[in-house]
Length: 454
Image 1 (cartoon, rainbow, N blue to C red):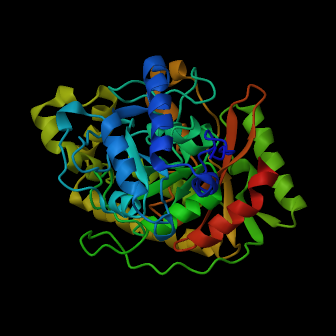
Image 2: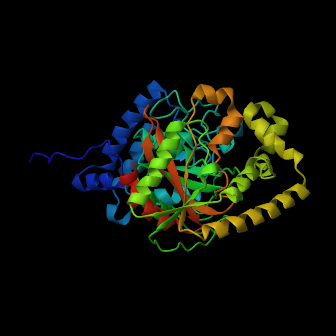
Image 3: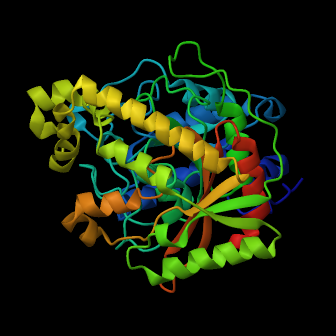
């Protein structure tokens, strides 16, 4: 009997497509062989610097064979390939946080990674990042500058640069990043992806190298919001072994009708007229869909954002690398030492003063948020070339965080979406954010608007 030909597109790695392909006869081993070939080509070209460590081909083959013996109906992520930011542990594989002298080999996978694998997902490897997740641009890595998936002269965004690139370049269906200052949203915007920044504590940080431990959030990159939801449903959950994990009950999804945007005088596009026009277009598209948009005072959000890198929260970053900086300072990139080293200038009094100030900003921001269902901003005000970023790393990185740095300080949930392209093909992205535990409503909104905005 002649085998029935397979009719799916193996280059479409969306979860829905792969599920349909497995029904038609695709096996995990066939998919793995395809991805091994893709990753080999990518390795030879080495133009984007996606990976720090790829899993060996034979390990992937053995994993796929073991998976094939299981029932796909029992595993919500059966045979779905994913990539892992290299500050998140995968058992038996080095975790570097993009610093070779910091590297260690964990005996156990991070909680979130283990959950995904238990659900049938296939790990492919560990991805490049800004060292110690300090940066929003992707140029701060000894493993190579991560380059944009659309135009490699431009930055990929960071710090979860390699994770975004793995999905954008069709090497993985989804990927894990981390997001403290915008690292799960900025790379999404620059590579035409959905970037979900879950409510802090919803996904366990056990097995994750901290950036700011009290603020970190494991994030999800995918090609669409439906895939993000499927991954979130598997990955979420209270972890009693992680002190910053929270037993969060997500609010049921509801329609979000009223949208707040920053006042016109508070919008910043840093001279990028095309991003300016694209945000205005997104606003008009929302109005055409029946949403009510209201300009609101963005001052407390912007003031809170300044605390992240111009306040004592730098001490959380310093805490992670203190021994390395003191004993092997050259192991840490100069720009990272410059940023994190400022932590030593803050006293305990400064720290409490900043906590009190943040509490005031939070109260003010919540009062503004109560006026609308959801807030909308650009994800970034512009995008920069690699050359420009390397020449002016601190100022341009600060500009990238203008709309993102406040999010975890103020405990909001957020989702970044593609919303058009400049004339040169580089993408523009927007971010919706809401109160904590509103992740499902944001994902519903994203699914509603994906085709309209893109």
